[in-house]
Image 1 (cartoon, rainbow, N blue to C red):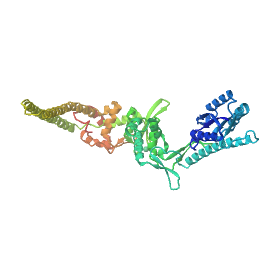
Image 2: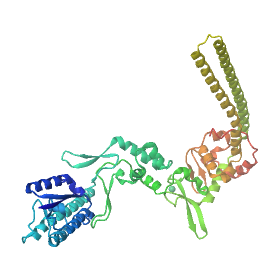
Image 3: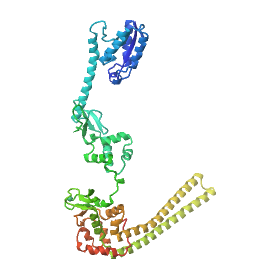
Image 4: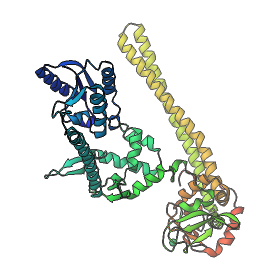
Length: 514
Ligand SMILES: [Zn+2]
């Protein structure tokens, strides 16, 4: 009796102890017991389901059998469900081998007697039952996953920052992994700031996470305590509250989503709209919310306006109007001439003194260099006279040369410092003298820099007048009538505006101190 052995596995079946080797062992043992002559053994390990009907090895067997039909008696495999879980397939190959070539195909466990009358029923049972079981398991698994997710539970491996655990009853649950959660929280917060590119943050804080995984992580709602349940059967996709604890708060998460989707660009590259640059500084006097700006398309084309972000009824004014009023308000400050003169004097003294100090320090450093050089000469002499060992000489000279370099570096630093000072003073003086013009025409970045130094707190604007309770105290010294900033003494505002232009260019240092 000549037989061909046929072994087959698929991935999900491999686990149940029916590996190819195991099948072959059973089959060979069976053949030995029955004194069968094994012509060949074929292994089919195409595992995926769609390969079920494409059996390259079985085709090889079939081709061989067609050419040598009289030399082969049986094709044997372990069980019918090893051969196939598809009844139609089983019937086809039964016909091809048995009916057409006269070669029996059979399982060694529960073999079917094809000469009898019940073979089709048995074949249906062995292959069909396995098929039904497959379907059932697959459906049960899918149902189970869907049900688990709907309950707000994690159905598979928890994402980074969480650990899968089981409670006393063996029920799985997900716990925060405190060691990782901290870094993840930090990552989200850094990205939400919108200052640094997300990928740089990844390289800095968690280089071990791959880029793709990193972006998936940033978009995963699991971190805010939610679970996405994919559409299943008739249920549409839905989001449910998870049973796990959130690592990220919703606000931070939303900011991150905006940045990832490009809705909110990182701040560095964000340019301030020159027409709406006051947004950062002014608040609504009625409700205290920020004043925001927007562009509106009306009949006359596009126009920009500021409005209260809480309630447009509180304030809504054209951008030009608001900006002009502001330039007048700030520009209306008259430099305090007496104080300016005094400042100028003091400053010049300071510059002179500073210069003298620097000069003195440079002198001292030069002297020190001389001393070191003397020591060096002394070492040279000693060495030449043979009173200094090689290693000591080397150590001393290296030491001295390093000291000289260091001292020279400090001198360079002091010399550049005095050069820069005059430019800084001139620049600051120019701003004070022409504050109004700066507020009208300077690049928006300069405007914001000046404003931030003058007004650390918020400025109220009621549609007509500006006032603030917090401005830099230095302004009291530089400008007259700074109480106008608080909203007092406004009657003089018209007059003071005119005066501000006629003030001679004062000389005072302002920039760095404010
Ligand atoms: Zn308001």
